[in-house]
Length: 176
Ligand code: NI
Image (tube, rainbow, N blue to C red; front, side, top):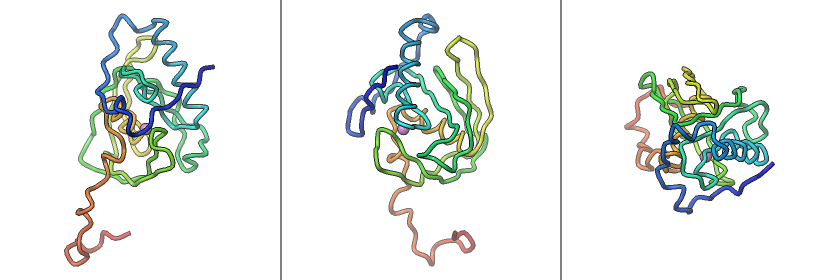
């Protein structure tokens, strides 16, 4: 069991765009070790997900999954999922705000708007293609982890402060 240290906000490696895993690396000892390290590190830190760049490996690999998570007690279960070279597409325009945290941004949470429903596809560690259509927290996790592969962290997704509109300008019926 190898628990790797998690890079923190401010580390320039978190801002890099990670590279696709080359086809001949699927099933290699190097990739399998990376996946084991991601799994062990996520478990040790009680994360809901972890992306390879967070442990300093700039490959497009993420892991996520929730059974019961003390950091996200309200979250529905998600089976452990490892995605290699994931691609994701929102199904429609609908956005939903929800709380997010990140092992690279310790001690902080924010309400982040994300696409509510999306389709994703990727390769699995054994080289099979996985495709899912998901919504809610599962969709949120995919977008959060996918962002890591593009050098984006959740604070980058905060709505701009001047989107806080004067009450008289806001549409009625949207409070709550
Ligand atoms: Ni994160």
